[in-house]
Image (cartoon, rainbow, N blue to C red; front, side):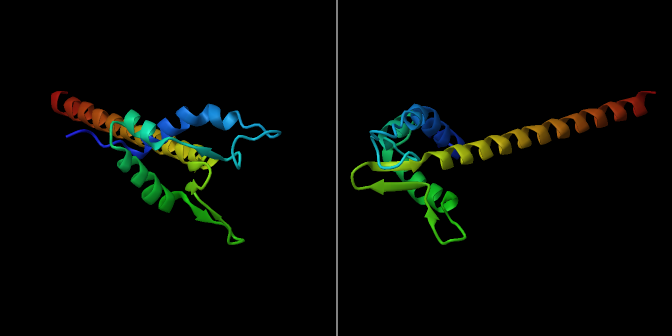
Length: 134
């Protein structure tokens, strides 16, 4: 069975693949409706992640949209992913960057906790060996 890409892997691919497109937005003669909305090619992302296009579309549209879209205090909805009539499928790129930063922070925290736990186990084993053989 092939591996299922993690949310982090999908978000990394989108971020690094489309970061230049986000930065290239021209205010005088824009090539898309809004700067924060960056069109993506789900087929290309799926190929990079090693899964079918429907798998990536479903993850973005049903999972990411539900998990990361929000309504502000004025009742305005900010969506993670949208389908625009003229632009096709697009992501809220700053929201992608924010979620990716959170994922990196979570990963770093997990790694730190594992290091602390490993160190504690090693110290316990050393203490036990010292107690037994001294």
